[in-house]
Each structure stands twice: as C-alpha cells, then as structure tokens.
Image (cartoon, rainbow, N blue to C red; front, side):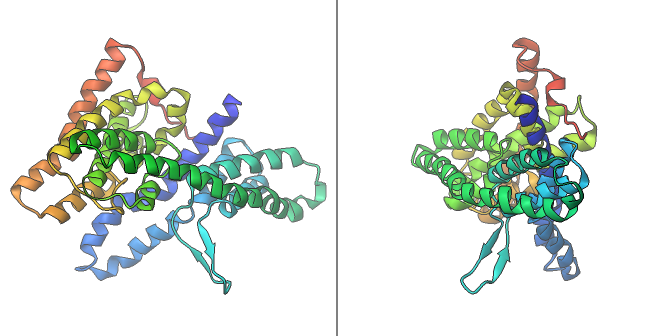
Length: 342
C-alpha cells in the first residue's frame, strides 16, 4: 500500500508540474503586458487551456509510474478526466470545460482506474484496444463522478474552518491562515479552489499568499541540494511537487510552517491584502505581490513591504529554520526533498 500510495502521489505531483507551471510562470505577468502587446494573448490563452488538461495528464503520469501499457495509461487518463469535475453540462447539453478540477478526486479516480486496468490485465486479449478504454471510463470514470460531491464537501469543511479564522485578531488570523495555506499547497487540495469557494479576500487572502510563498520558497531552498536548479526553482511555481515526499515524511514541512507563521503575522500587521482569485498563488507568477501592489498602489513604501515579505523574509527565515531542523533537531535531511521523474 505504501508503494502504491507513493507512486500515485508522484504521478499527481508531476502532472501538476507539467500542466500548471506554464501559466504560473507567465500568467500574471502577461496580464500586465497584454494591454500594450495584444499579440501575446494567444500565449496566455494557451497556458489556460493546458491547465484544464490537468486531469488527463495527471492520469497519464500516474499510469507511467505504475509502468502500465500505453493503452492502460491513456485509459487511466481518460477516467481521471471524467471524474475530475473539470466539465459541466448545462440543461441544453452545452458542455463547458474550465478550471483544473478537484485534485483529490482526480487522484481517487485514477487510483481506482489503475486497480481496474491491472485487474483486467490481459484478460481482454484481442479485445483490449476496443474494450479497455471504454470499460475504464464507464466504470472507474463514472465511480469518480459519484465520489466527486463527497470530496467537494470535505474540502468545504476546510473552507469553513478558514472562514472562522478570518474572524480572529488580524495578526493571529494572518499567522494561522498562512500556516494552513502553507500546508494546503503541498497537499492534493487546491489552495486556489478553497480560496475562491469561500471568497477569501482582504488580509485573509494576503496571509494565504504569504503562506503559499513560504512553502514555495522554502521547498525550493531545501530541495536544491537533492535536485538540479531548474527542479528547485519549479517549487516556487508549485510546491505540490513535494506532495509525495510530504506525505511520506510530514516533518519536512516544519521549516516552511514556521516561516509561514511569522510571515502571516507580519501580513496581518502590515495589512497585506489580496482577492479571492489571487489568494493561494503565493510567489508563482508574482501573483501575490503584484495583487497587493495593485490594491494599495505602487509607491516606495508598498514596494519595500512587498519585496521584504514576499521575497527577502521567506528566503532568510526558511534558511534559518531549514538549518535548525536539519542540523540541530535532525528532523530532516536533503535527500528527503528528492524529486524523482521515473
């Protein structure tokens, strides 16, 4: 079971990297540039389209981890898409594809699909090409649509807890929300999804951004010694790359959690704000700092605060806590952050 879970999480993590990082890298920056360079609009549109393919790519990546055949692998990808919640069908039959779906349910559906195709194995013989894709989308895929509402309701409970935190004193609220989002960003739960469902805004959204930033920057620093520079920097765009490692050894997130608490408290004190649609991005595409500056205005004071809280302090605090937890407490080591592509 541990090996199964490890392969599942690795596939999910790699799928997220492939589909979400292109938009995370250029999305917010392009939104600023496009009014002056409209010819760049196709680039932004393309990155958004690719995001909606996350369920398929995640399913395929999971299939690769389990060394399935090409037909089995693509069948898992199709089933994951069916159970993802990325599509909505109107009463008139019009179908809309938007968003990235419910990541947890994508994983649940893909796990069922993997077990299903492994069970079928070679039983279908010459009917494999004809029957396996259809059976996989009609059985595991539809099971995924049945589990989808329950998974969404479970995510709603987290949203209700975060809404309660917004009623607390700003500094305490900032610290706690930042800590919650620093953990959500390395879990299968979508930070953006939670933030938009509960319409998290104001200081709460700012704290969420700082929490995501703490994990992204921290995981990039911690993983650098075990991975190459490109892989390390990819954590800033999506710390979910560490999802598998986090579930195998949760203590690796302690330095980032401590950093998030301090950043969130400062966020509450300095009134760092955001919107429901920016909360959960952190430093990816510079969404967090850019949205804060867009709200409060671009001046020396605000730019200094943005640079300090979103870039300087995350680096300094994470370096201190990573060193502390590795050298002093020996809770973790560099190899714990190794990202594998096989």
